[in-house]
Image (cartoon, rainbow, N blue to C red; front, side, top):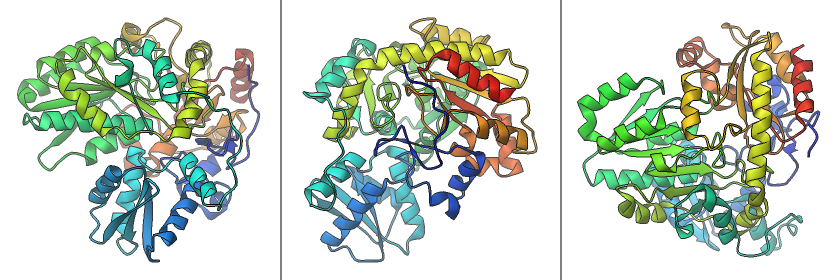
Length: 511
């Protein structure tokens, strides 16, 4: 059982692997410096969550490849995992001066640097989809060219890693056949593949209305906004419990419905809709349901019976060391459209790099254990924080009330909430970040940074990292509050440490 770490310096990879997806942001100053790209902060922060920050190893590989391919200076390069991903990224960028070059099975999209907006869009494509080169792939390529060291030793599965991952996932994805469990390059790669498959099918039927239910993870929303065609429409319904709003919308426009996307529970408010009711309503109106259980994890919730497509991040819980970027997508075999969706999903999924899969396969066997231990700790922490006078509000899957009741309908066990707990501090102010909130975050003796579902406790000011553009102005903060989000909300990913250590850390910090 790990011990609760006391401190990681700003910019340190957590827990320390070259491929760690978490970078330490131990103070509010470092969080803000990271978001504003403050030079002093960025001297220390060389990496970040891989979809948001291109790893230095990948940047080096791309630069070397650009020279070898004769790509001239003055062009921005974007390393992608496949020809199809590169073509899609090129189209998404809307660049007028762009090209694609292949080298040893991976691809560089190159765009004239003068096309600033196109370069930004290409970068956003990598962020939203997770279709960039893997850091392990870049590391291996550089080593093979004699331009980098032999990769550091790490625990890797010795055998058929794809089969091992499918074997470990199969009990939680019944009755999907193992061959139909698609491991993808990231959780967002899984969602983008599922969404692509659903859109392709529904476009053939003339159905072009997509609904987002609840405040969902940033890049899910961005894909829904940006990846639809000119004749398609996106509608956001913020309240997962407002059945009347959804029924009224479908009474008017049910014949146009392509599908609905939600998370169960949502991130970061951990709210759960009435999933069985929702599934029935969407299906009656000819729509497809795509549900993401990443917040709680596949071990904690059983959602496949209630959706047409399920997608989840395997970086969380399955990759509990926080050093792999992978996801999973499947079609519900009981869906009326299963036979049509299955080949579309298979075609849309980007296969992971072999060593990335080897690393996941070495960890995924403990997914159930990690989910259970972290879940038990999360239950206890939520109870402790709910009774603390310096905590204004606690969000957790089993929270008393409608959302908790809904979560129980999909939970596999009353002790399995996943690792996440979010809190509003009583000292938070409508006026913005204050010294009391800063003191809480800065002094909390644990790892601090993005991601969740690890064996170690990890805390972050989630809205600052996901929606910094909204927290820095009055209109944005009002927009967040209208949707039930405190801009200074703290998201806690509870680890598997001794709960007494976790409780003591929060108790001492809250005072």
